[in-house]
Image 1 (cartoon, rainbow, N blue to C red):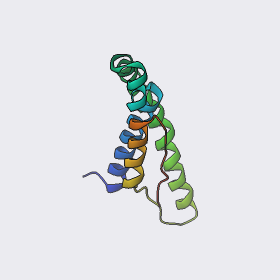
Image 2 (image 1 turned 90 degrees about the horizontal axis):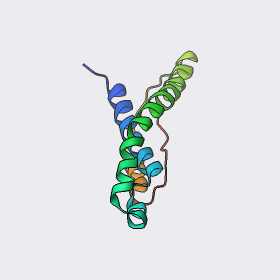
Image 3 (image 1 turned 120 degrees about the vertical axis):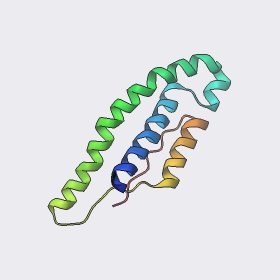
Image 4 (image 1 turned 135 degrees about the horizontal axis):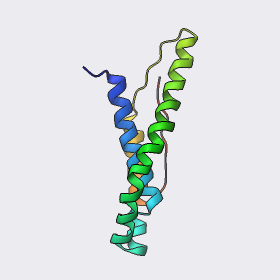
Length: 106
């Protein structure tokens, strides 16, 4: 059975990876209006695995670092996703290509 923390990290990782790929590729509403669908979509397909790899290493290690430091000082800590922040990040990236990185809650 997978813990809630593992599920929350996996969901946050996936949503933020998609948001970063959308923003960096220009595959958003403004980019499609300016340049068209196909060029931005192809760039998005290229950026998606790159975003998953970069966020897989940086985001996950960063959040686990917070948890381990807190546990080192005998505090209870675990990662919890912030649903509204993830929706805001994905929405901002899909509409205008802005990257909003929501903080996690311990």
